[in-house]
Length: 81
Image (cartoon, rainbow, N blue to C red; front, side, top):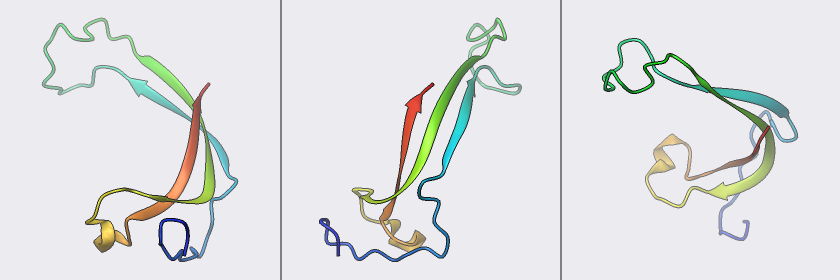
């Protein structure tokens, strides 16, 4: 058991140590219910993130996730790029 009292179940495949880059593209989408004035220019805001998967166990902090395999998950570290 870890410091949170959880017993870790080792996954069959680990992403621990995997580095990747993700870019979030924020902007108006076709079919949206947003006010027509919002994001009317059509410009997009690109937010690049560098992400690293870890094997560190994190408590999600709320009950109810047990049906999805537990309330504990692995941590992903992200930083803006």
